[in-house]
Length: 561
Image 1 (cartoon, rainbow, N blue to C red):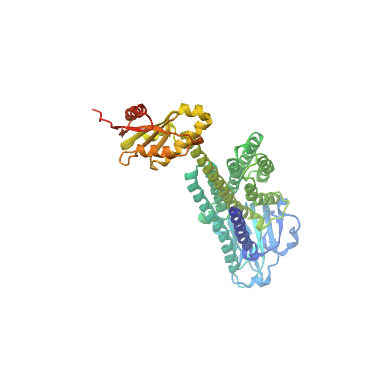
Image 2: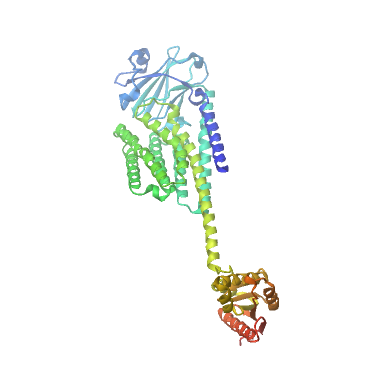
């Protein structure tokens, strides 16, 4: 119950954190959105001519329908409440393209330009994988923007998420998105350290796999957030996009590998393991092909890569069903951890296939869903570790109980001969061994039966145990023969034991007595035990011969020459 409350508490914290980001004003995250129109680039087109003829641009057809190539993209008339700002930033989503030139038309008819290539894009990358170009300064206010994009792959669009932001809005965007990615990075590092530390103690196979999963997600976040491009501004942006695509595929593959290590063996047996191998191989092949071959046939490579995620998603229902069939302890935690990422992955796939319009939030949904997954998976791991600790405690208790049963003589509960010798031989200092034998035990069995005789032995055992110090060893080493071993510095008086036996009420009020033989000496080796036992046994026979119900002491063993 306490663990369930912790889960509810943590989910509440996650929801509050994500709500904070979700409810952040759109302008604070992306700036003021701009509607854009597109036309293919043909020889002879110039920026001044295109500014004068906006009617030649297509504002209705989705950009990705035009395919790869060179394009001109025209913005709407810029909002007048923004154009009075001393500095403005034109922001777009980072996509595959080789060169972008931004032309700015000002109110006095002047046209200024700026831009970047894929090799210099790193200087303009912002957190959230957006590209920001500062509008060239001019006395008049800007009226309209025109992008000339060369070498556009146009997988989702040519100019995506176009917006205009003031310096304050740009700073707010950096603040919010930096907080989001930094939170994920800190959490990922903490989870890796935490699980590696636990792995050192628990040695569970799923823990290093989970660390690799989180490490891949951290790498994906590092590349998709554009921190990679900011850290290495000389890095070609298209190479960064290749790395990002590859790390996303590796992260998705690691999810399946983690599930195989996390669930019980029965969940991934037979066809489910073979199917998961096929899904992993498909995704690995298409992602490597995209890395190596793009931009050759980039449209089809992208489509194949996008569709290769579907087998992984299709594996989820069979895995959950199989986990339910084998009564997995981790089914509900896995479903809770991966429910949201799977939904967002479906949205990403739908967006990649053109079934949904591009959205800043959908484009960044992978990171948000991975943050949720990492947190909830850590809960799943904590839950599994809790079950492992419970299982280990139960196994330890069973082991202790089994060991006690193996060391204990079942009738009396005293040590058996083997356990007695294991603990006796090697004790330092002189030891006093007492051998007690119940008198006329055959007659006892004949008089009150074997069940009655067993009860007599149990009573005798209890008397012996209560008559000696706690550190003494007491064992039943034969039918009605018992052994007591105590340190010679604190000897036990045999007469005291005999007196307790005489006064103890026995089954059927029988008068039960015993004879005791004792001897003192070292007990460091098995040879010492044999010598000590022979002397005590001879003393026992002397007590029997003297009339029973008495003791005899063989004294101290002579020191061997």
